Length: 215
Image 1 (tube, one colour):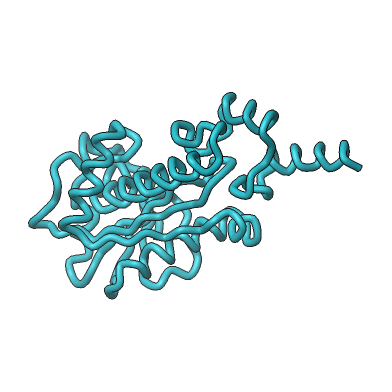
Image 2: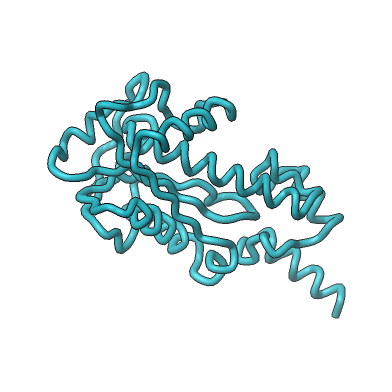
């Protein structure tokens, strides 16, 4: 079920989690829908209300060092799962299904029964293994979703930094694969890598133009 949009509190809290006192409640969020390169990564987190690291909030509101420190603190005291959909699978199934699949995998990676998932956004992913509630701006409202956004963001950023070492010149260590000017210029000079999303219109257009020239 989808709840109406709310004005986010100054910091996220456990108001939504407290609606489901019985069993395990996890927050779920994904990162990486928009980039031209790299995987989609989802995080799932079950917090221990008695041991919540200070400073958890929407990952986009945190500096890189603060995100990384919080990710370590969260993983030390909470149950955390990461779900990944790599580029070949994303291209095969499409962006929407890849998004849903990453969330299913993140929940499964928790390795414990989940009774209810709180999902960031307004669209309920398909085939989740438990009941779920969507929360608009959930990463600003729910501590569990905010925690999930942090661990997903940190994991994906680290992945892109590692890929940047393998494929230097694209700036993935700073642009995370988004289609910024530097990345676009690098594609023009260096070409398309196996980690570029061929199903995305800008990449498909470049490939079409290259194939037309070569033929």
